[in-house]
Length: 125
Image (tube, rainbow, N blue to C red; front, side, top):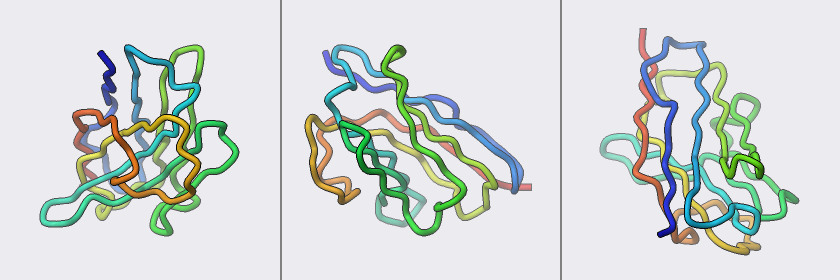
């Protein structure tokens, strides 16, 4: 059974950092594009950062450029989203997603077929 499990969310003060993890089981992430998405209350799910299956291209939403970093550790079969300089507007449920051999550079939810359950990130003082 293909499964993605996110962890690492929580409550953090503005300016703080969190690292989200996305552990895959039942398949290897080597041939999969990875996407991180978020959804705040009353808003649509949006692409935060995506990386192609061969790591040749990454995407960052303008709102997170220079603050967030996407990566993967093939040995651990896990993807990460390092989030620094967090702002209250980053508060949302964050989801990781995977799609095999996705060549598109677009970071949109509709292109991804496998999803984790989400982890809450709250940035507040």
